[in-house]
Amino acid sequence: MSGPIIPTPLVHIRHPFSFFPPIRDIEHNEWIFRSATPDEIRVMNAKTQLELFVPRRFVGEVSLVGEPVMIVGLVKELEYREGAVYPHVRRVLEMPRAVNQSAALIAPFRSAEPHPPAEVVGIRVEASRRWRAGRLVFAIIAALLLACLALAILFRDATFRSRTVVPPSQPVIR
Image (cartoon, rainbow, N blue to C red; front, side, top):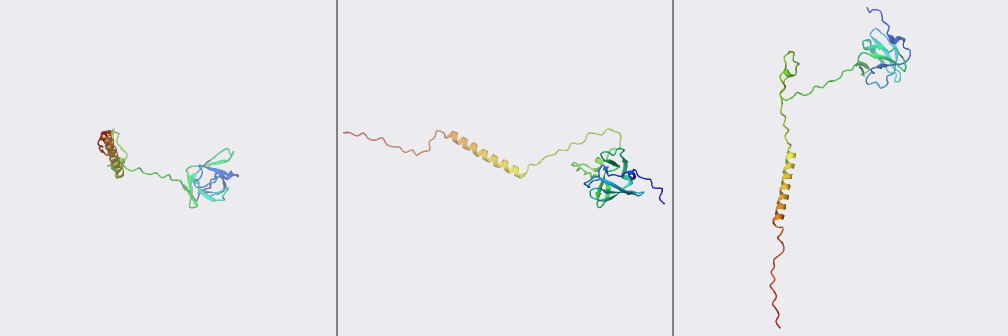
């Protein structure tokens, strides 16, 4: 027991048109009207010959100006998947909770009272073992260089050759 079929403005379109916003996951956005039922509109892609049934509840207004191309508005953003069109759902990722934050703090406050300032959570980053080992090696090398420098300053006047004493030669008497 369906009521009378209300003709869609697309019935009068005899040339290709485009959806706005374009249907996601379909490359070419040029369509040709095929037929209409009380619940949906059948359209065909002008380039790929793909036929789709678009629910009437998603079809909006048709542009009055057809130049350069006629535009058919969509009430919701649609996406093509598994051979049909569905409303596009944007996925929202939930941010991880702060340290020691309970679910009660996340729920929106319903009272009109001013809220106390948020708690400050201290974050301390531990140094990795690799970093500690690098600092230890650096410290050892620096200490050795300082020791070498100190020894060089202390013994700079010292000579490191053998100390053989040559007796003075006897004068020759003639």
